[in-house]
Length: 391
Image (cartoon, one colour):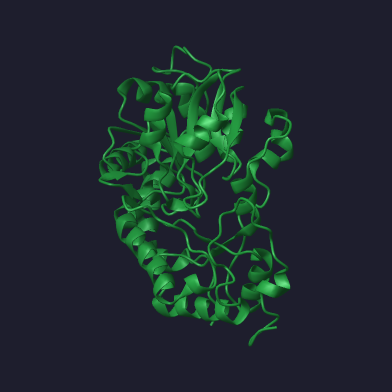
């Protein structure tokens, strides 16, 4: 039986009638921009996360740009950002005229650390964007304490995760989330939000999302036309009560991989003791990742690599990359990662099917844990079998 990389349809199937009813009610009411559904969703999201303010915006990229400006980042300022993440995390910095400064990440968590931030920081640095990559919270408080800089928590992949008793999205001075359809809490189109406990930051965010105006008459800032859609807010209100359940199911799916023995064939992600991940993606590493992906796909198992060209090697980011910049962990992770199927409905039986496919394709211990620095990529033929039964 094929195991898809994602299964977004099955969790939504029982909710479709309620979603359609909510959408119909919005259409009947005729309020489509910053109406009661957006206000209600903002309040419900804030309560779910335990944060004072949630401000809906048009998408996660706008959320980052608005959050950066709200904390005072201006054109010409430097902002530290991990090089191993989605392009938008750096794009938003450049889009407001600031300079992304690319930092390496921790080999085990794939996130920034105070040490990697310190290694990248410049004298002109004004903030840090810390990404909760793949649904594992970054050490935001530690980075804030070590740097004294505002930290924007990019929690786009981490709704449903926790660091101790605090929810992802509440760990920084300000945080951003995305409701892109593939996210753990996904709308039926684009959407995003900015989260903060600071009322002054929240007021600035609300102004920036509406052309820089607080009263729709006077425009104090050059802002954005970036508002969460009323229809999307209505849909998200149906989905939000299920997020905790879905997040727990994702963790159960990850535990099923461990129980089925996936760690004998690939390097599994590490989770520090105080963290509860949301597993937006379940990303492992292997010395011959692309060959293993091809073998899994051929066996009907969805798998793919992420961020094969990291941010400091993207053409559009070339003006911000100093000559000779070396980020060895980022480069190693970019070349050797692969995502295995994950969803709230991935069963233990499906996890076993994936591990069976791994066993047919990868030599036992071929993915044995190694420090990225200094690791040479072996001949894929030596690490990945030609087919069932080995090479």
